[in-house]
Length: 292
Image: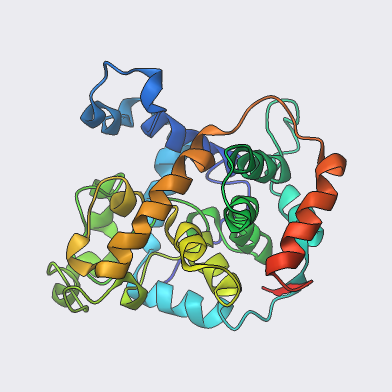
């Protein structure tokens, strides 16, 4: 097992919203500055906060093939606890930095804002539910996992690293970078094998996908499983590992991404007013309690 630091929930980021804030800095809304070229948005290192840089240094150092396999063995039996809709949302709320409640939205509010924006645009009910639950996998932090093993841009392990991975230079410290088998273009995989056969860096995306994979449409499962795979769905990396199904359903991931990134606002949702609607929505697709 790879030796790794035991990071508290409070570090290296002050709270998990800082990672999402960093994403919005890297990927501003296209209408925010139409004169700015797309490639200019990738050069953000000078503006990255030290805690975000440290987060990716740890993430890239410790996300190895061995680590990912160990985490899958530890968590994918889904025997940690069972949670329903409001159990899960209230559990996630404890991830908010309580020292600054006036400027940080709770997780429940981010998820409801995402879902409500999808709902306003007239999308199918399964799409709305996906907006509500896409980040439920962050409960990994509350099971003792460090932030760098819960959030962050995801990428395949066991093959050569794409130049599109954020802070690509930190991967030189990853032990897998010294394993020749892992550093060819396809590595331990066959070209065109499909992402379902590829080990992604461990985090909340894969975990939540495994929790709900028997209940939701394929489009929803791709949204949940790959919404943090920015090298793939934003930059077109790793096409050589994808199959026709991946290419088809990545259109759904791209459709979901703006709702995840750009729906945060200071206008707080009325949780009690929305509660009956989302309870019915959950019951339409999911069992009363999910195994985590």
